[in-house]
Image 1 (cartoon, rainbow, N blue to C red):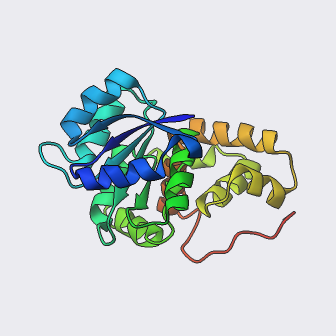
Image 2 (image 1 turned 90 degrees about the vertical axis):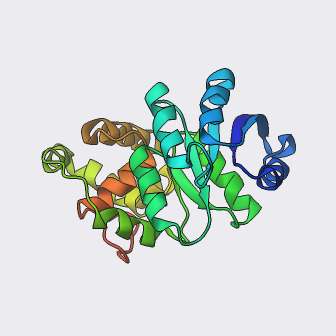
Length: 225
């Protein structure tokens, strides 16, 4: 059972999420908050597996709340829910440390998969807006003189794995592409995170796009290549 805190200033939106994230589907909504400031106290109280966070809220918005939650507990897992067209704030949420984002009007199954992925330590970047958000992210890059050195620290196999992470593949899919065990892939992923100083899969995807490891429209390699 995945414990979840819902953060949204609209009661109707939270009610809809409660319907999607019910116990029969493997979720337990253990807390709710109507703004980012209230979310800080609620998350500290119940320590959920995942936080589902709205962006536009009074007092403290989702970006600021995400930043504050991660400052208090770097292990926090935050999925941002938003409406179509908010590319700039989604890019800001990624910079703040969100583990992923999903559109509010996405199918219920996609929202469930997104929460599961984030709670498991993976990232979730909604394909409907991922390309636009990453372009917006790259339009205002953060200068990091050490990034190239960190990238050079990767082995050729780790670089292969990073490319496939950037294309959105899961560990199981990467294992099939590279024809090696999934356990080995998990080891590579952990080393990639450590070497690149990124906290999770979403941050690794952004790093891959930021530094030209993956380019929009580039297909994944064929299995065994």
